[in-house]
Length: 349
Image 1 (cartoon, rainbow, N blue to C red):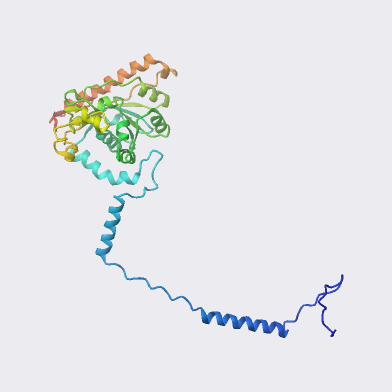
Image 2 (cartoon, one colour):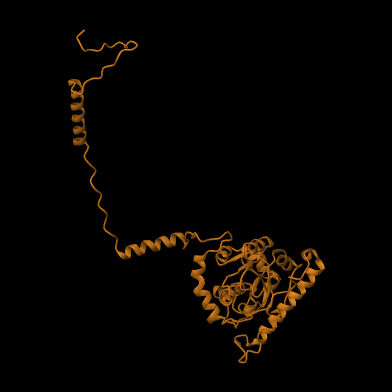
């Protein structure tokens, strides 16, 4: 064995392992072989050529592609992030605001009185008479509160079950602030600090014929009063005049309605005579009157469980709304215009 060599056998205990020198000829040979291998790989595998972006498509081709995409998706789009738990979408409301402003200012020329009765802060429960088969009244009341009140808050409004069940109706109304008419939804909205507009007449009020217009129907069993008491919010009566002339029901065709799975098909001066154009509302003159809030603060703590008291307060609320409706009717000269002297202003208190 030559001097300086380390045997291949395992070293004994206490021995020192000697590392190979950097100038070892075997190590240099390995490095040279690796270098040759790298050069060979670089030579054989060339770099992928750079991709050249295609030229931009002409404007007409881009427009045609956008039209094809719109037709394929039927105008559907992704919902924005500003959607609350009840489906109201701020972006949808902003896009519909010019239409609502046009209806409010120019088409129905809404005359508002008693807006000073609306609370300056905090939620309230607005109770209105149901006018018309479609919820134009709810949209205009919400628009009036947003524009005329000191708080500038847009209230939510309840939608009847039969409207919620119609295809394509419920999602659109939800984006504008509509919620299904039930006690749970009203309580959740009031607890969250949002005002709500309800219509206790329900389907009976919406399905009135023209000869029964502005005759208030029964208000139920005091659910509105109980909700205001238990949630501790003001209860503001609202009278709506004008909505029952937008699509006046002359009579109800029940047999075609049963065939279509609905209670009846409304027959109006324009529908079904004009087909789809018959659902366009007529430009009647609208009057909205807000009354003073119902006095509920002085009631005892267990007032929400007193059925007799709830019944009496419900009739009192119904009487106030009836007075507001009559005041709105007196404010009009005809179905299409206001009186020149505006003698039908809101009653005091």
